[in-house]
Amino acid sequence: MEKVGDIMTENVETCSLLDNMYEVAVKMKDLNVGAIPVVDDGNLVGIITDRDIVVRGTAEKHPGSTRVEDIMTEKLYTISPDATTEEAARLMARHQIRRLPVVEGNKLIGIVSLGDFAVRELSDDQAKGALSEISESNYNGVQH
Image (cartoon, helix red, strand yellow):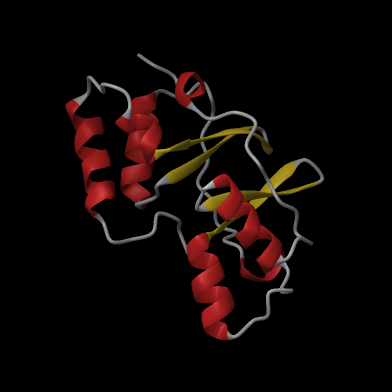
C-alpha cells in the first residue's frame, strides 16, 4: 500500500502569522496555488486559502494589510507521512477537504492534495469513491 509520504508535495511554501492578506494573495498567484500553510516558530498553526481571503478578508471589507492570523483557517486536519494513501483519502472525504498538510509532530513536512491522487491509479474502490465525493462537492476544501 502506498504511503502519503510517497505522493506528497515537499518543500511547501509557507507564510507566517504576520504576513498580510495582500502578500499571501500575490504568493498564491505567483505559485498558482489556492492554499498556503501558516507556520509559526516552525510549527503548523493554520492554513490560508483563496476562499479565506475572499470570504473572511475582502467580503468583510478588510484591507490588504490584514494579518494572515486574522483570516486564516485554524482548525486543521493533518496526516502523518507514514499513513496510507487510503487513510488520507478517507480523511479528506469525511471532512470534505481538498488539501491535507502532512506533519511529523507539529512540523509541516509536505502537503497532499486531491490532485496528487488524480495522477495515480488508486487500487481501492473506497478511496476512489471518497475522492469522487470531494471532487463533486461545491465546498472549497478546507474546514471553516
